[in-house]
Amino acid sequence: MPDRATIELAREILNLLTHTVTSMKLFPAHHATVMGFVDDLYAKLQTYFEIRPELEVDVQDQAFVLGGEVIHKEEHLAKSIPIFFTKTG
Image 1 (tube, rainbow, N blue to C red):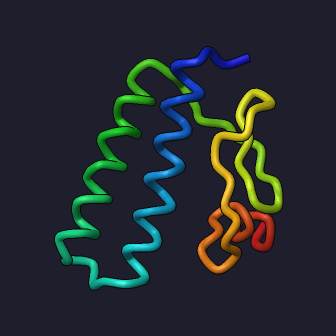
Image 2 (cartoon, rainbow, N blue to C red):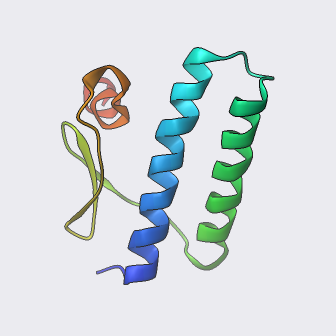
């Protein structure tokens, strides 16, 4: 079972991932909004992997789960990252 800090950091990473992908759909890659989200996501991933060897999450229809806890759920199917993973396997 992951500790609370791991769960919270994973939650932040997946929320940033969703915002990053959404911004990439709206703006060109060089846009400041996209670059800001990419930089923030990269920094969070670096922090996570400095002390953890992997980020293993379960994928449900509309949610990512870590240690039995939902860490990201998306109600809007059009921007749902979890549903993309369930469709593509």
